[in-house]
Length: 229
Ligand SMILES: [Zn+2]
Image (cartoon, rainbow, N blue to C red; front, side, top):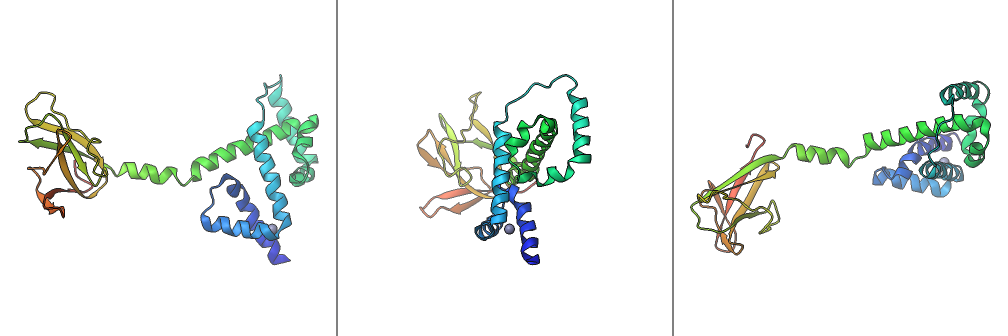
């Protein structure tokens, strides 16, 4: 039983993350496997879910006069007298607690703290935010400069844009035959071709390195390192 209680303690710590759907696949499996067998943790999960639903649907209430004073005195009262009643409050119906005016301000404070923690936690630990930012940070702005081709339009198509013939159009606003355009690329090796007048695939005549494309033509090869400008 001691082992079970330790396990439950760990699972209960993960339940909030389980509801937020921020657990790893492995952690999620551990939690779900435990929940199948443990009614105590199932009850805990239901209480937590109800709490989250309450927070989401809680109406905004304008604060009454002396709100802060009442709030602080209520909190200290609760801390002194009601500590033991508040801690097992997961088992008490949250609605009853809310409806009791005696506890309302204390409960509002607890909810505010819970909302704050929820957002702080989501912001700090949501895994999809940070790697995305990191990816944009390492991108390097690459300037393409093409000359010596008679054209009404020139686009750059390569493995960096899925060989899309219109995604990266170059421009020659003053009509001097020098076409330029900028593309943000992560460091790496890329192959590309020029698409002239939306139809003709042309090898960049100014590239330093070429590679056979397997169809009898040559792709231009572009190497981007962290210092490329
Ligand atoms: Zn359990």
